[in-house]
Each structure stands twice: as structure tokens, then as C-alpha cells.
Length: 442
Image (cartoon, rainbow, N blue to C red; front, top):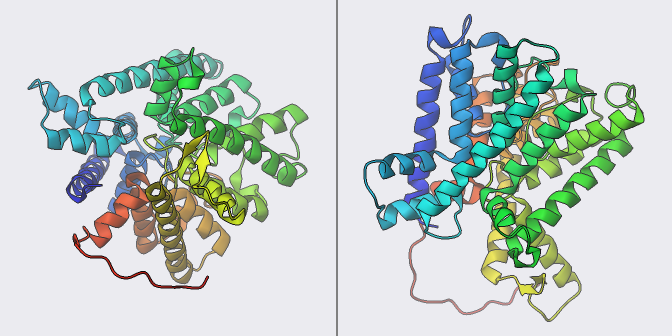
């Protein structure tokens, strides 16, 4: 991982967020008073495709403001580097090696064939978001006129595929908790966005030859299914009789909303029930799903499914005292990949615990709900227990320091903890010697 490329990507995201906040702060983009910290928070949440809000998207922003938020979501989901490279390609035919490496770093591309891969990415995004918008528009037509339904359909399709979780409804999708088509469509968009562009393209190109899937794609497919099913079982078992969440629903609606909750708790910020009514056990265990997150190179955040899978496999091999290198699907896992996975998980845990500690000591608010909010920000998930009114996120209760910490966590989650850590600690110096091996008892 090149330090200069990571630094340029970091600066790029900061600039996009800053200019986005400046535009949102203009009187023509919002209604009433909008503090600049709230404009920055909203721009960060949109660009980092998180979904946490401190001011209502539909009630406090004009149509132009909603359009700006949607553009920030799309920029953050695809990656601003994609748009920069497209801009350069419109003026010249080739990219130099540095530009290709920066692009690869930004989107976790498997190779330096940037132009070809970019075309595939934009084709995937365009097709999926258009199909999602059409389906959602037809559902929204049952309650709204054509123009409003079309705008709601486009906005929610883009927001869902990019795992942003922004909604133009004040209570997110609580009004659609019995609408199977709407909830399943949102879920499909969220899952596809969370799988990652590389995985989606590979699945399409090798759809008739599943045996050709790479190890990364296989882990993503199996991992996604396991996490969805595990989440459903967990939430159903805890919330089945809770009158504030699933208690008043039919058996079918319980299953439907548990499915929706399991998917959105891991990568996106939509909700079909009042999350403020969840039991504390649900809030606690959901942090594990949010920390896991989506796939590498996807629109989602978190530590990534592959990272967690690698560490679990390694732990199993160590506990079995196997004399073999950890492997999966008859392929050996490299030691440097294991080391990186361990570093990501430890660094992620450290950042989350540190931010939680600072907020607990400065905000005088419940610990578990603060932890939930921090993990949601770091995982760029966007779910929240709310501000007590069932509308805004818990972050709305924070002061400027608290909101600033959440902003940093969202940026760290979108950039990636490994890249964010590299920004903080700097580039390592090359050493041409090796210390003798020390004996340590563990």
C-alpha cells in the first residue's frame, strides 16, 4: 500500500466533503437554520455512504439539497477517483502508472487495467440502479403522484445500492414494513452493493462456470449468506415477542422484517421498525455484524467479510494445532494476508473503543447507545437508535466534539482502517537488517 496514493485519496475525500458541506450550507439548499457542523456531518455521511443524520433530509433540505446529497452518495459509492479518472480520460487516451495505481488503490481493483474495469463498473451501477428505481417507483405510486414517486424511487435506489441508508421519509421505511416488494428490492440493492464491484463482475462473467470463481468471490458469497441467516435467527429469537419491534407483527412480517434488519444492520442504514425499541441484547450483538461489514472494494464499510473469515479460519487451525498453513477451498492463505487481517481487526477495535470512551466521558449519554452509534459510523452502516423522537440519529444529541468524532469515524470507515492508520502513523522506513528471534511464552 503506497503512502502517497492513500494520502491523495484521503485528501480527495476531505475536499469532496468540504465543498459538499459548503453547497449544502447555501440558503437555496436547506430550509431554516443549518449549523455548519451539521452541514459537514451530512456531507460526510453522504460521501462516506453512511446514512447517519442530524437534520431531517426531507424536512430540512430543499429539492436542490436532496440532489446534492444524492450526488455525494454516488460519488462516495463509486469512489471519487473513478470520476477523476473518467475526467482525465475525456481529455487524453492513456493514464500514467501513478494514476493507475491510485485508481487501483481507491477501488481495490484486481489489476491495473483501469479503463476496461471502469467501464464494467459504470455499466453495473447504471443497470442495477435503474432497475431498482423502476421497481421502487411503481411501489411508491400507490401513495404518491408520478413525479414524487419517480424521485423517491431514484433516490432510494441509489441510496440502497451504495449502502448509504439515506431516506426521504422521516421514519425511513417503517411505513413499508408489510410491503414485501419494496423491502426485498431494497435488500437486493444493498446486498449487491455490499458484495463489491469485482465480485459482481466476476459472478456475471462466470455465471455458467461457478467453479471458476476466485477464493475471494466464494468467501463473499458464503459469508454474506451465513451472516444474513445468522442475523435473522438472532433478531427473531430476541425480538419475537417484543411489543416495540416484532411483537405486533404477523409471522410472515416478522420473518420479512428480520430479513430486512439483518441485511441493513450490517451494511446499510434503512430501518422498517423503530430501532429505539430494540432490546439491549440486540443492540450489543448487532455491533458485531456492523463491525464485520460488507466486501472489500464495495460500497459498504466495516472490517470486511473476508478479513473476519480469514481470522476465523486461522484461529481454527491454531486451536487444532495443525502443522499446515491455514487454507480454504483447497487454497493456502498467505501469512502476510493473515497478518494484515489481524492488524485490521485490532486497529478497528482500538479506534472504536477509543471513540466510544471519549464520547462516554464527554456526552453524558447511555454507554450502549453510544457504542452502537460509533460502530454504525465506523462501519458506514448508518442505523441508529434515534434521538428519542424516532426520526433522527442518536448523533443529533451530541455536541460539536461528539459530532466531530463521529465524522472522523465515518471517514475512517470509508477510507479503510488500514489506509487510515497509514495516514496517522506514516510510511515505515526501510531496514536492511533483521533482529535475532526472541523467545516469548504465550
